[in-house]
Amino acid sequence: MANDMRQVATLADPTRRAVFELIAERPRSVAEITRALPVTQSAVSQHLKVLREAQLVRAQPKGASNIYHIDQAGLGQMRAWLDRLWAAALDEFKREIETEGKEDNG
Amino acid sequence: MANDMRQVATLADPTRRAVFELIAERPRSVAEITRALPVTQSAVSQHLKVLREAQLVRAQPKGASNIYHIDQAGLGQMRAWLDRLWAAALDEFKREIETEGKEDNG
DNA sequence: ACTAATGATTAGCTATGGCTAATGATATGA
DNA sequence: TCATATCATTAGCCATAGCTAATCATTAGT
Image 1: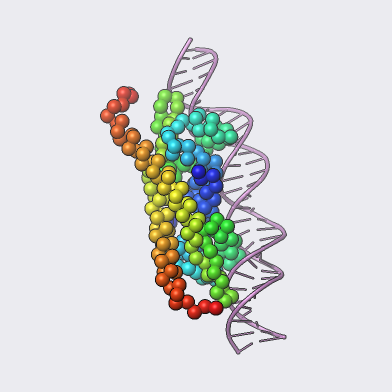
Image 2: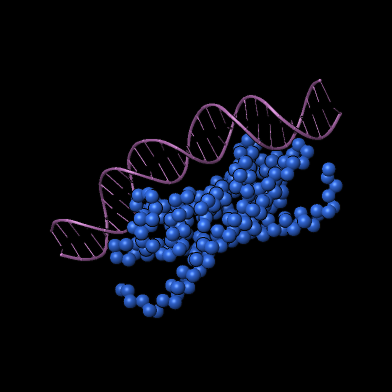
């Protein structure tokens, strides 16, 4: 599993994460996103391309604008991956609690 | 929210993600992790340092070894962050479905 | 047709980050 | 104490990635 998980890598950059979170709040145009961030429109477009390739966002043309939406595909994959790790962590935690009294270290 | 979220950035690198996933499977020593990966022990230790700083793993000394465990703190933070995005995505999806018939585009 | 606005793409710069090799520090065993 | 094993840290190298500036393409409005 998780051979790829490029979604996680994609959301590593703070600016790109900010772009994604803005879109998550509500669908937005490129111009709108650019106005909200301290980088150029070029940078935003480049981030959007990466987010698109990771299936984290989708573009929906609207006149001269491009409205970006969250894409559930990539977000769902990422969530599934994280859930597996989370479950494993819980298991491990349980196991530790259970064997807490039986230790013979020290 | 999500001012920081360095967990996500931390798990961006494939090797580091592999290290983390090995530990998630079960607690392991540095040597064990190194044997499982095509990088040097030095690289592994460096990755572990970053994972520690992001509160994604904890070290538990055991003789000359260091056994690494998952740390729920960072993983939990990351999960909470992702859950918020997920919820937002679901909302958006619902809204799109609801307005599907009422479109006047075209 | 002209102008303005949106957004994608490219070239080029720079900083960052992951890697190896080398070394240091600590614990174990004979 | 000497040799061995585990792990951390540092220096230095190199590839990658994000950024700006510049340009191109498309749409809207007049």
